[in-house]
Image (cartoon, rainbow, N blue to C red; front, side, top):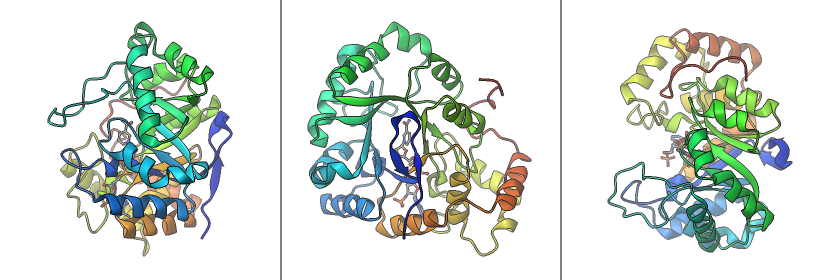
Length: 319
Ligand SMILES: NC(=O)c1ccc[n+]([C@@H]2O[C@H](COP(=O)([O-])OP(=O)(O)OC[C@H]3O[C@@H](n4cnc5c(N)ncnc54)[C@H](OP(=O)(O)O)[C@@H]3O)[C@@H](O)[C@H]2O)c1
């Protein structure tokens, strides 16, 4: 089974359209417990399946450490993306989201810590975490700090995890090589901004592309995409009547292939701690985008119940 690849914008990297989001390896108290051996099994299975993009963060508990421990020996097989601005050693009892600090001292100390934990000498992509305002990024001289780290070879490309409303300004800054953006059939408000990011030559990493598994039969709407209430995602799904379009597909196949159908997606970093889900996601991704007529009809039905999925108003159409 071969995964399709797409060029991750100006990074030039040939990314598998299915990437891996390593947040599920964070462990308690903010995530599920995962045994070290199970984390090693899933990380190696990710690479064995041909997935070549891994996204992590200082904020994801033990995720960076587990990647370093179990797959740093295979470092040349994956494009490694982490984040900056996160507190270095948060008290796990703090509520999330943790307060962030985008000043050069914290950005630099964070990268040095990530490199140690990930057992590597460089990150392929350093992404500003949590979508701060342009004003804050400028006041805290975050981009200058990232450029210095790039000049030193500690990172290769600059990115940001951005959402509405600040993502519009992030694009206008013209400094980021890649954007991490939430998007799925249940959260379509960043649709045009993904296209705008690709149009300026940046790479697009889509998060939430499996809608957190919410529509999957085994989840039964017990979870929700980040930023949405579970009953809201289930209501939107039901009222859109997209279920009528499945034609034998599972809901998760439909949702993942819907995400992959976005013409300007380069990779979607789906998270899972479950090897069976990983296998299933790889099989689904190998089928590629939905047929064009089905995709068009699905968008029409979903948009008939509104585009807002938790991140504010739909974006302006002009960049
Ligand atoms: N602000 C940020 O920058 C930010 C925020 C959130 C996430 N992220 C990144 O994006 C990645 C993905 O984001 P996400 O977790 O919000 O969204 P996601 O990838 O859509 O959802 C992941 C969830 O979906 C479930 N899942 C995956 N495949 C499944 C399947 N076939 N059947 C049933 N359930 C399935 C997983 O549970 P199982 O373990 O049960 O499979 C997991 O809990 C994260 O890992 C992280 O790297 C970044």
